[in-house]
Length: 621
Image 1 (tube, rainbow, N blue to C red):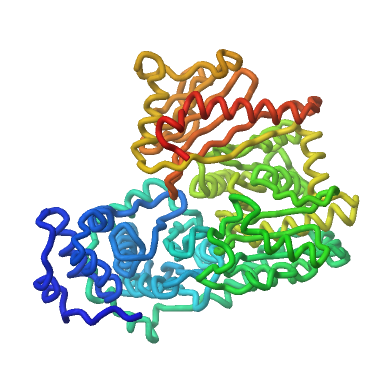
Image 2: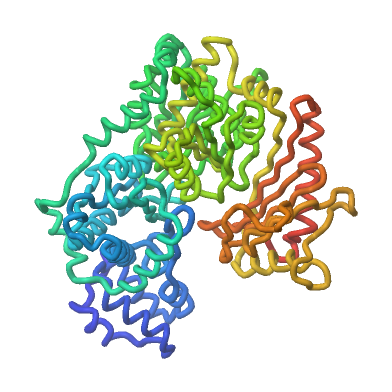
């Protein structure tokens, strides 16, 4: 349905409207009416004005989204807090101006430029074109993909084409009503502090769109505009294949193992099909209802394979029809991977991110030893993030490689991996609990294509050489390195201030004195031995009481360690109104009472949440 025809100019339209009388709100309403050239979103604001819905207008127009771990995401609608044409131009103008500050040489900008990609979501192509127009006007060479691509193609292109930055238009696994932007720096990793703050500042300093920013005609035959698709497509699969030793390719070719695959209506099928062809795996059997890119995402409400098996019901049904025992699933932009396997009792097990991290960590080391004539394990590094399982640390103690922990998100993990590589280290693998995995610094970010290929190759290898399933191999890993039990969950809040209040209370637990944290749970049965507070910069496990991870004063991150080794980390999500928590307890290799560890972890986690967080007092769900 087309929006009603509006007066010719914003000024003419403003003259017909009765505003709120609140100076700050009316200024933002005026800005929107004067700046927005999209009739549909302008009409949304006009209707709210006519309805005198000042509260909604204040929410939409008096706030700007901040870049977080996953970039910038929001609902597609009118408003400075949302994703739309005007906000896209503001983001692009901020990026253009910031890059021009860093690279004042026009010659450099024309030579290296910026990569832009987009997935299947509504308005993705248009937003990408608007970003391209702004950057072309800033004398940047622009590599704009001509078709929908998976997110990992963008950081790969940044590295491969030696670009200054990359942008992908995506909301990853968010609902269909959302979209967003993820920005990569010239090293191919998601941009890190101070660039995220500087970009935010540059955007806020360039909110008014230039007239030229709306003109997509600049894309017609522009000498600085290129489509990198063919070059990047070929180069991506060439580097992916280089991680697979020839013996593994032979095993794949001979294996009869088949895999059910769903891209959950995203862009993954075409790219996974090619990956399996290059790796000599049997073609994936796709879930027909979810195979093709579809911005309506019609079969699931939330295309998020992290949260549980609900969005994989069609894949499980397909696997049962085809008598397949392994299911692979990507989120819509193909940077995450979920894996499900049929157990001996006929039940489907969905591996959590920590379990996949254990399997793929073992596999990364096994692959390195196989493809390296003279493997030097002591020079190798594996990385995991705060809140993810410490299973890699347990492996490192026995195998001799180095384990490194970073803050949450691949902006930290990818940049740390590149830093270590520059020091001469061999970075084999990185993972975080929300099913994100990295195998190659050609893509210094999570990559669901490479991960799917590695999981399938590992499964074929285990079946062909030892007739072992992924579930059985996971048990072997725990037998060798010690059982690691984890619980990951979240509490949803209505007001962000609630989380600040909860965490501040935890820092003043006794008589409202700052620095007095909780000391025990369950009437003293389990005592807190160490506290790490990355908001204030405290870690009581070190003599100097200073954390070894970066301090984040504007983010709530608290970790408690108990006398039996159980740890639990609370952190406020950067993308959703959630307080996330992850708990872990582990045993030594000789300790085989795994059920007892699971029970202890469950009991302790429930007690910590109830006694420390007190969700009922704050209305947290």
